[in-house]
Length: 358
Image (cartoon, rainbow, N blue to C red):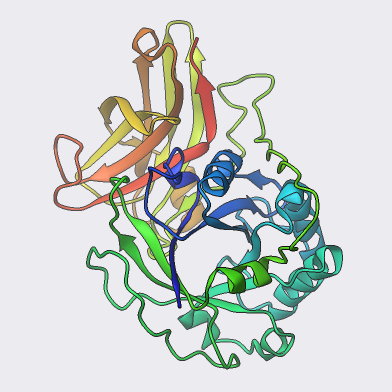
């Protein structure tokens, strides 16, 4: 028997993973990244999934840009924020950042988490990485493999394909076979996965004990802005498309000033139009949008070796229509003059930085 499931991060904030939400046997949720990022939607999704009877996993994104630390520093940060989930959820190391070749770092993180919890985490990466470096030390230590390999980018629903061949591991625990999954209850793309085992096997990976007290998981606390709220989140790491790393974005300034909501930043994706869209982060609903004219940002051009510098933007929105909403920014590069997705687009959601408009 195999199980079907999804993995989500702050990009899917507000997704319904409860009994009447997106169908899944399990839900895998990003919890932390590096030494400083906490997914603000992690606990909500975790509690909703658990309440509905779904199996759950939580993962740590190694070397999150802007928050890179040592293996032990990042492992301790992860454990601090998922303490209440241990023994209920599979623990996972997501290995796809800028230190992919440092296998010793990954092994040290896995070993440290196991030593502190008594649970062996899963190791997640994609086929190209597995084929580029020697991960025998991790496989030989019996850390299970969750591997990504997309045969097609066509929209699809659940299936249970055989996993791709992977060096060092005799078997694969879980396979992420598409990043373009389409399921009822969510309007966008989803990563779809198959777990090669039943619910008892899942519980074994999670270290679930047959008896014992139940403790409500602690809520990961997102960093909250201080001092000037319009610049407090400017230190967050750059957003980057893992498949097209030349496509990057960053929010430099965001927040209420008088009767306006100001938004400033940059987006390197080449397109005919750039739109700034204000979203309700709880309901995942658009509240307002504006097309912005590109502004020269020679600092961004120099930093990333670009051949162009018209990547900046600066705009503002009236605050009155946004009252009562918790808002985030969606930066969209698109070829559609109305700011929709026809003809090609690139979206970056900055979910780490939000404002409750009162």
